[in-house]
Length: 100
Image 1: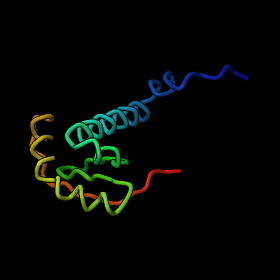
Image 2: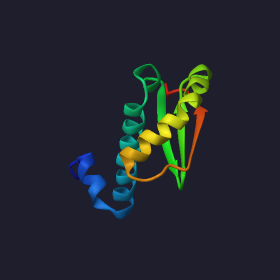
Image 3: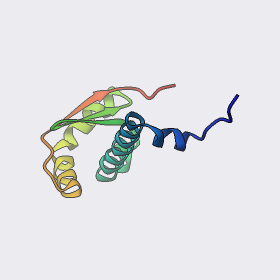
Image 4: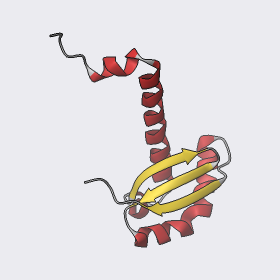
């Protein structure tokens, strides 16, 4: 039986895993940008961010914060456009509780 390999080595070993790793890093970076552009009281309730073409989908942990976040979308769009250096087409907000 061979020695176990480190996860970091495995992620560098194949093109598919490298692509997956890059996408995961990009998702974390976008989530951090979104959270830094929001008030702390809302940023804490972001559970995930997905970018699909020209749409940014924000996941929040409850319906109450989903509604509150929708009011922040115009300001968030401006802040993200400055931070990312490109315009953000559509921003949608969905309820998605964090995994347990």
